Image (cartoon, rainbow, N blue to C red):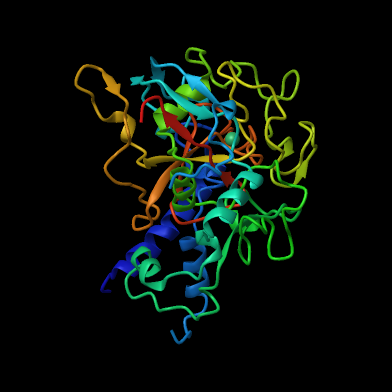
Length: 384
Ligand SMILES: [Ca+2]
């Protein structure tokens, strides 16, 4: 058989599904079981590919109006050298290791995730349309798909985004399509699909934002996206080598510490933290630097390309100086789909799955894919 790229991808896909199933059934080792933790590693490419293959016969700037342009809503993050990466390898994925020394310059950071109200002001000022609101560009998409994938119908290429739908009918924790669905008409103003809206959600973090959208907003504000080294340093809030932004106490001990999934993911949410879905920003105690929701609520987009092995890159003197990530992405599961780093976990995170509210947790995210649990916050240099 002549193995085309498409065939190789399908073989790889089937291999990974098999590996995941084996892993989930046979392994409790948290450092090796990446598949089991990949509940949120998702992209529109993956879902559109699935849809396309299931239908083989298809015919185939800065602004004074920026609400955040004030140090009132940013805090000073001091410079420092810290140990980046997982302090507790038993809870971590391989991608969070090895620990390594990193130096970060001082900067300002938004105290909370960018809200719907803030993003509305940006859109009102600029007329910006997010990627999720635009038809999918086939010329770009086909570069991410296996060679010779037929062009889908115009119907498939309609605007949309990835939406989480809780379900009681779960047959395993491997097939993420049981709770993640590509939803036409879902975007930041319609977070749960075309019939939903953001009325009364002005103080909730904006979602269905992809890297390009976050970058556009940041530039409009005269800000930028944080590097993941900056994000982790800020998230630690002055604590040294702790698991969470609040220290080492388990997420379910004491008073609620962040907006996560309390109960059994993804079938039962006890609302023990006060919320089943996204919460308005600043509902839980800030970390030591005055930053809210650095754990949970929504994932936050960073500027770095994603490469699982990036932490293993040696530095000249043992300390990486303000690392800005690898030169490009590396993600074998979807090698042609550009991935950026996201940080902090979301309202969907749970100890039984990825516990990504840990301050060292990192995840790949397609840079052109919005999701109902992904937002961002901005930073600003001390001196322009
Ligand atoms: Ca967050």
